[in-house]
Length: 144
Image (cartoon, rainbow, N blue to C red; front, side, top):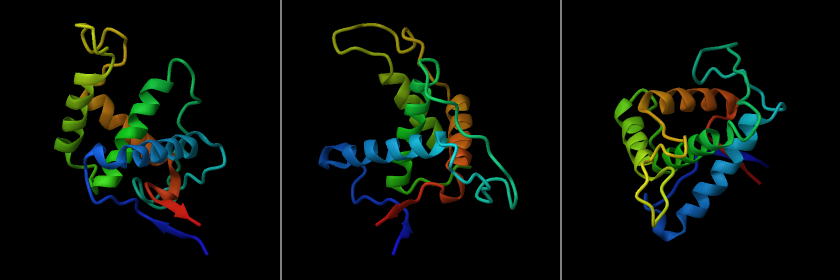
């Protein structure tokens, strides 16, 4: 019997192996969001009968933002930060991303030098789109 569960973690840090879980969830979210087989009638965001489009296919133009969004959603799911109307959570993730994205350890380059910098508004929009593209299952993952 399969059951749908919200991912959970006892710690919000990535130091205890939860980073592997975040990456696994992110890959599941990417797969589900891009799949043409996902049922996208999602009352979760827009109400009964609403349909979302799948996320774009992963290409060199879309893969970075899609992957970042999936990782952010996985982190939020594991931390129980599922109130997407709370802009402060999205702001915190956008600020964290702007400090790491595109940086190399030995480089003094700016975060947007490699073209992957994300604003709070863009991240919020990407989160909403991917949430819809995840379909009726939302952030839940089926366990066997």
